[in-house]
Length: 372
Image 1: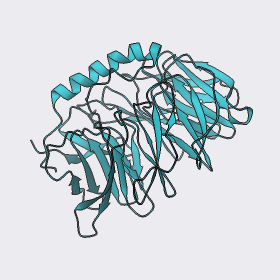
Image 2 (image 1 turned 90 degrees about the vertical axis):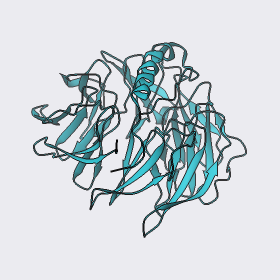
Image 3 (image 1 turned 135 degrees about the vertical axis):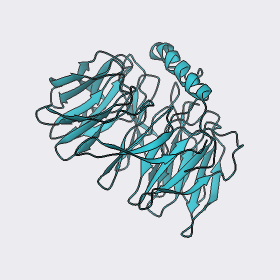
Image 4 (image 1 turned 180 degrees about the vertical axis):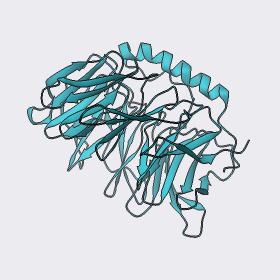
């Protein structure tokens, strides 16, 4: 339980306005209308869950289900946090704030956390998650730029940041020495990790892209606000391999298993699509919009909806396995995350902020709540 204040109902209202403003973003790609609403960003390592929500970052020890630390220690900073914190191999926590600052934190073995460095060189809000690639931190910003920073010091590595035509809301994907970056300017970019130089970019995909591309073989899969899942061929320098029409905007990136891409859309439809040709294998209409990326388990795929429901389907047959019981009282906008065999979901507008889902039955158990 945390002693910091619960994110307010006003914050939830602002998020609703943010979603409405996305109607305009789908057409123009501008990031200038963002309000400082916050939704919970969740990430995990082998022993902890990390929550970025409202005015603070929280670390929860999964062996005790208790808060290990939160940052800042006292509320009052102007920062609001959205994106899941990144965790380096040596345990550093890197997170970006709506105040345009990158914070790098070092947890203490005896509890607590200290600030290692901050970077305030960005001029736009940081909504997409930072990514740690070796000794480099990649930070997307709403100022249209991707920054590469030294993990140890926070100093810029490239001579200048990589610039796109509109805001960046999603974490970049790093594969080898290439970065794949999606932008609200409707394009995907391939960038040299060492130099920050562009290798190629796609044509405009006619809709903003708000999440990280998924790489499977030679194809990058990206969802767009043009109500499409698009497959981009990286061996052909960004040529479009196929497109799949959806019923609504695609916010979250797909998860892939055994040749099928699983994802949802804002119309509340969950899909399984063959990655080789973009043909639909199955679809299921759920009880609310799907903004989060699904989670995969052995032979199972898990979807969450804004209505507060978790669904489990068999991946091969689409057979429904269960729906969460009881449903959560708040909205599920954030990606679910596994820590070990435990599936975690983070909820807006609920007394319980993080719940554990029994992947065999759908039963829910509250792990973390704010103190009123």
